[in-house]
Image (tube, rainbow, N blue to C red; front, side, top):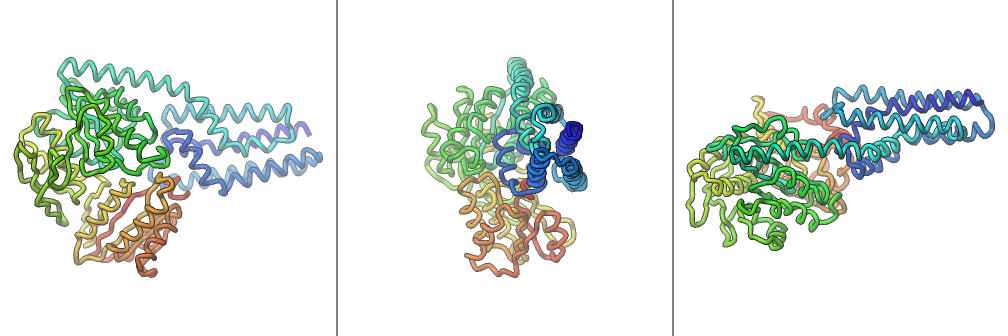
Length: 529
C-alpha cells in the first residue's frame, strides 16, 4: 500500500501542476490581491473541478483506511483525469480570452511557490498522513492563496526597489528641467480626463501621460523608469485605488504638483466598504498635492464637495452649470451624434467657444475640469480651445465607431460605474430615428448596493433602448427585475452566457439604421462567475 500512496500523491501533485496556469490567471486578474482572489473563488465554490477533487479525496481516505488498494489506484487516475480535463478546457479557451495570462516575472515566482507548497504537502502526506493521499490535489486553490501570502515579502521588496528608482527619477527631472507632475484620480472619469488634459496641455508643453489604465504603483513606475525623459515638461499620472491607502502610496511615488479629482462614487465599494472611505482615499491626492500647486475638484459631485471641507486649503471647483462655488463651467452645450459644442466659462477670466468629437455632457464636464487646470498651468483660452478641438475619442470609452454597414457602434466597454452607465444611456438617447440596442453584463464591485444599482440600471435601459442583450449571470436577475418593473417587453430582452455568444446568437439581428451600445465588458473570470 505504501507504494500506491506515493503514486496517489504524485498524481495529486501533477493534478495541482496542471491547474497552475488557470490559478495564476485568476490571481493576476485580481491584481494579486488576496482579498480579490478569495472573493473570486467564493463565487466559484459550487463549480467543478473542486467538488470532484474533494469527493475523490474523501473516497481515497476511506479506501486507505480499509486497505482497498484498487480503489486508491482508480482514484489516483480520476484525480489526474479531472486535472487534465480542466487543463484541456483552459487550453481551448485561451484563444478567446479578452485578456490572456501574461507570464510576468511575478507570475512565474508565484507559480514556483504554488508548486513548492504542493510538493511539501505531497511529501508530508506520503510519509506521515497516507489517509489524506487525495487532499493535495483538492488544495490547489488554497495552495495558490498560500503562495500569494508567502511571496508577499519578496514582491514588496521588488516593488520597493522600482518605486525608489521611479521617485528618484521624478525628483531629478524636477530639479533639472522643472518637470511638473499632475495626479488624476476619481471613481470614474479619470482615464478620459487624463487623455483630455494631455491633449490640451500639448498645445504648449511636451507632455507624457501614463497610457491606457496604467494607474497602479507598478504601472506608473514602469512608465517613469522607461519613458519619462529630460525633454518632458509635464507628466500626468492616473491614480487608481481599490483599497484604503492606495492613493497615499501613489502620492509618495509621484509627488504631484497639481491634481484633479473627477468624482467620488460607488466604484470598488465592495473593497472600500463605504462611500466615506472612498471619498477620504480619493482626497488623499488633494492632501498630497504640492502647496505651490492647485487641486481641481468636480464641484457637481456632492461627495466631493463634502470631503473638500476637510482640506486645509480650498480646491478649485468645476461643473457643468453656473454656480457660485465654481471656477469653471460650461454653457450652451449642444450634443449631437458626431460630437459636442459648448462655451467654456471661467468667471472673472473669460470664456471661449469650444468643439470636440467626444460624445456626451459627462465628457464636457471632464473637459471643463482639465481646462481649468490647464489655465492655472499657464495656457491661454485660445490654446485651451485648440487643445480641446484636437482631443481624440478614448478607445473603449464612448468611442463612436462607424464600420460602414449602416450600423453605428458605441464602444463603452471600459466603463464600469453607475454614473458612467447613466451617461452612456443619455448619449444613446441622442441617436433619434435609430433602433437602439444595448449589450451589457452590468457592473462589479458595488457591494451591498449591487442589487439596487442594477435594478435602476434596468429601469434606465427600459426608458432608452429598443433591444437589450444581458451578458453573463452575475447581474442578470437584478437587471431583468428593473426592466420588468419598467414594463419593458420580455421579447425584446435577450440573454447570453458571454459576449462571444451574444455576438453569435443575437447581434446578427442588427440592421442598417441601428445603433448598439456596448456598455462595460467583464474580464473572462467574472463573465463566467
